[in-house]
Length: 394
Image 1 (tube, rainbow, N blue to C red):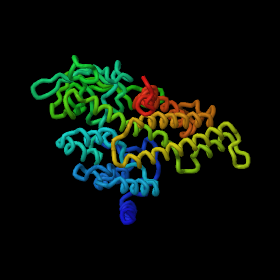
Image 2: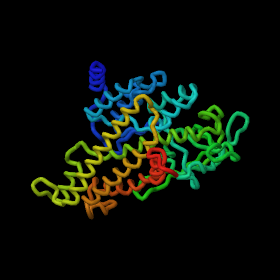
Image 3: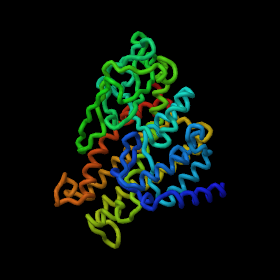
Image 4: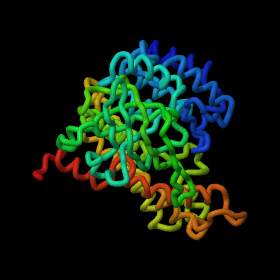
């Protein structure tokens, strides 16, 4: 492993641009896809280098474009990326959600077609799960996929479809049997967002952003070969993908932390609230920050321990609901503390009276309220924890 670490250090020194060795902000994120936006030329180079190496998906098999690394090697890579402060070359629902279920449930043809493109950031995916009448009760979905000669005809709508207006393809839950019990009549299918009959309408949030969308399907023809797994067997795949999604969303608990001492919560609190003997003058805010740091560290160690225990099984357990709940609560609490710190300067929306960081704090605080819903509501996660982790009676 020592030799591998040395190899990683040398490769990163040669292939990670200096400009990519910073945390970056949301506007610096790269999502890939056919119409990928690169805020900096080096961001494109960084993605190309990591994609060619397969290290955007380090443990995926090399025949699908992945890095082919062992679990231990992937930890070394993660540590070395962290050591130089490298930002992620790619954010992708394909990497964190679809890819793992294609590896488990997809056909060889589907894996060979889609996984290499995901690794290289050449395709951007969105998720077609929630509907206007099927949110927490996801199995109540009504989008129809009627079987015809060599294709399915899809009609219906989805809501809260993250980045649907920028996605190339969608992984979608559809009902293929209206007579069977609702969990047994669902299928999992993939299709191109440029297909005739697909339309998308962004939803503006209170934070001012519009990454969520309404998505409509009007007689969309999808080849039968795009069905993943068995017809009417999609609920099993859907649940597995949700576990991967919840692990991804749980990462919100460690987001927003700045390695620049100037922008830590402690330093910001000293700037806005003052300090006494180099301690934040407001004891209540000081206590909240300390508790948040302790909880964040405990959460980080728990995630690391769980990942090590799961080395023999790459599939997430129902405990992912616990991580999703706690991670998003941590993120929400962080922005509540930041609003406590900036005080009335957190009431601005635009104008010269407010700094860019103050305006960002306001929007992030508003945006964080959605954490309780996305990836499954907090109430649903607590039910799963109670039933499947704590084994409490119904």
